[in-house]
Length: 358
Image 1 (cartoon, helix red, strand yellow):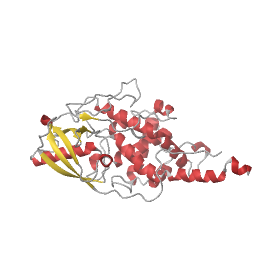
Image 2 (cartoon, one colour; image 1 turned 60 degrees about the vertical axis):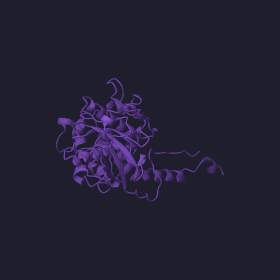
Image 3 (tube, helix red, strand yellow; image 1 turned 180 degrees about the vertical axis):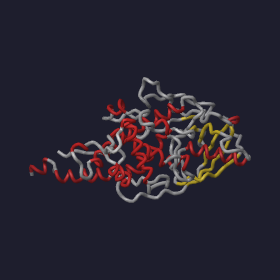
């Protein structure tokens, strides 16, 4: 009998339609007017490019526009909520084009901070206790400050990150050993909270676990490419990692924020953490599956760092959003076809039992 093989996130073949550039009309209202129909102090027409940014980016951009109009430094005002025209508090981690179309209006409530997004939307996550796995708990704070709220339908990407077959990885993935904590910058969301860094690392770890299954399959595909000796099985060298990134169009596709040197640096950082100070010079260095995941994570973190990307290009402050977007835009888009081709070849090589019996 034939068997079905699926790969998470495989897209249909063919030319991808071009997204239409978007502009949103943002009504800016201070939190003192929260819950009232009036209170608008300014409006702004924000260029959103293809709309691949998240609503969190839109809110901060609009607040900086208010500060500019008031002849105040950028960062003077901090967003507290993104609200649609029906008065519903939006999930600020939702992609703009998934929620709005060109020319739509949206309300941004703001204050002088210091904490951002104090108005909670239903389903907003909190940091899990240390004894729990990341992304296992979600809170339900309900409507806040008289505003309606709702929870967006969960997609595969937004579901809790407990992918099958990666239990071994949950136990062995040590972010501290690989230095991932150093990638958390000051531009992260809600950085004024004491536990913001822990939240960001928990979300990043959960995202890596969610994508680990597909990335492991690609690791096996690329580490076996070329002349490989038995002692090098399950190990990826620099040339194989470069080939993976070339096929994923990590440098040429999207914002021009990384070079081949950055790809090599991500490989070497993952390798250095893997071997530690005892790594001997002159010895052939290769990545195992875990170090490969970390190297991919580092490339994604640098590629889509909001701190170095200017609007309307896509960029994310949060590490997990950078990885999610890299996997969606590069891995799913350019690499999954290899698995579809392999499946077709296997189907031709092993016809079903009915065909053989005939």
